[in-house]
Image (cartoon, rainbow, N blue to C red; front, side, top):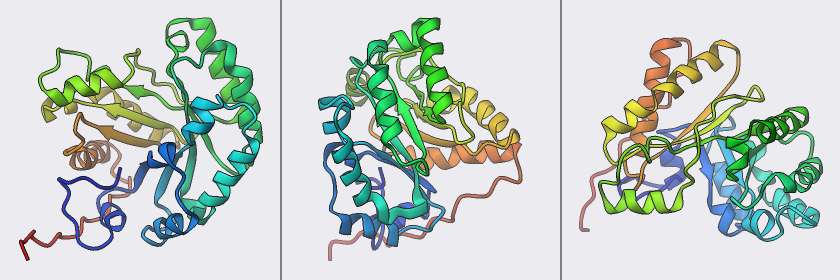
Length: 267
C-alpha cells in the first residue's frame, strides 16, 4: 500500500510514498482492474527502478482458478504495460483451497505469461508447507519455470495471543502457516507480518535480516515487504529493516530521503 491516514504527504500520494520506500505491493489490482490512464500516473510518479509487485485480479486466481483466463490475463497485462521496467513481478496469490491437484492449472497459466515478465506465486494450501513431497513437487516445478515462491511469514503475528482488535482482525484474515525461507530465483520476494508492538515486530524479523543479507551476498536482489495489523507503522519499519540489512551489507544502496510533509492545518 502507498496510502494510509497516518502518513501525511503533500502532492501525489504514490510520489510521496516513493520518497520513503522503493517497492510496493500492488494489492488494489486484486479487487479491481484500474484504467490504463491510472497506471500511466503510477509510472509518472515513480522512477524506472521503483518496484511494483502487481497482484493478479481475483477474478482470475480465485474465481476462474487460473483456468481459461488467457484473454483476461492479456487484457490485464496490456493495462499494466505503462509501468515498463517498474513491473518487478506479476504476483499470483492463490486461495487456500488451491492445492496439489491444481498445479496443472498453475503451470498452464504461467506458460501463458510473456517470457520477459517475472512471475511470483504465493500459495496457502497447508499441504505445500507440511508435506515434504508436495512442497518439493511445487518447488521443482516453479524453479524449472523460473518462478519465485513468495512466503508470507505470519509466525510473529501468531506467536502470542492478540493484544488488540487490530491484531484479532489480522489473525482472522491472514494464513497461519510454517515459515519458509528458500529462494528459487535471483529475485526473492518476502512478505512479513509483525504485531502492534514494534519491538515484537523487529525481534520477529531477525531471521529475515540474516536471510536477506545472505541473498545479497550471493548476488540476489530481494524485495521485502513489512506488514503490521493496522499498517500505520509499516512504512517506518520497512526503513528500519533496510537499515539493519545495510549495517551488514554497507554497499547496499540507501533508500531515498523522505520528503518533508507540510503540517496539517484546518484551512
